[in-house]
Image (cartoon, rainbow, N blue to C red; front, side, top):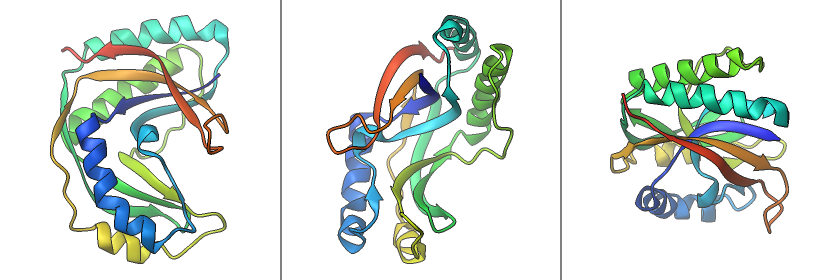
Length: 182
C-alpha cells in the first residue's frame, strides 16, 4: 500500500480555499489542479508499505498522537517548489506541528520504514505543472490570502491509490485515525 500520515482540512476550510483558488484555476487551466477532497497536510510520506507493517505502524502512530495536543492552524499565502508545484502554506502552531511530524517520523522509523530526513515545510499542494511552468504570478496572487483558523484534532494514516479517482488522479482513503490529546 502507498501510505502517508496527514492532517485533513475541515469542510469549511476546504471550501474557503476552493473559493480562494477559483480565479487561479481560470488563469492557469493547463496546470493539474488538485481536488479539494485531496487536500491535506502531509506529516510523513511513507511510500509503499507492506501489509505486515501496518499494524505495528498504527500502534506507534497512535502512541505518538496521544502525546500531542490539538493544533491551531490556518492556511495562507502561496509558494512553489521549483516550476512544478504550487502550494499554500500552513500557519499557526508550527513548532508543535513540527514536533508532531518528528514523532510520526520516529514511529515510522521504529516500524522499520525509511523516512526522508529533510526540512519540513507544511503546505497544501494546489497544482502541479507537467514539464514546468512559471508559477510566480500565481504565487504573487496567493501571497495576501489568509484563511480562517481551525483546530486539527486528529492524525490520519492515508492510503493513496494512484490513478484510482474518476478523473485519473489519486484517490486518498483514510485507513486509520487517532485523536491528538496530550
